[in-house]
Length: 92
Image (cartoon, rainbow, N blue to C red; front, side, top):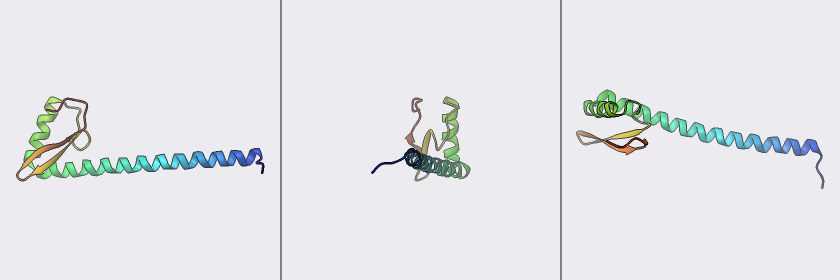
């Protein structure tokens, strides 16, 4: 069984296209996850005064950090605390 150059080229292109589609799908999923996290934190900041105060304190130390991307917050009863620290900056 032998393949001509056109068939080999077509198979190569198909394999590359499948690889690119898989990479794009993974990227879209990661971006959607980040967007949902940011939206959740924007709602938390909008409705919770303690969350705003915590975010302002963090922004005073490191103004380039973003809630939902670089760190996550969670409500703990009436209080708000840092849940996960994803930044390379030192955790306050």
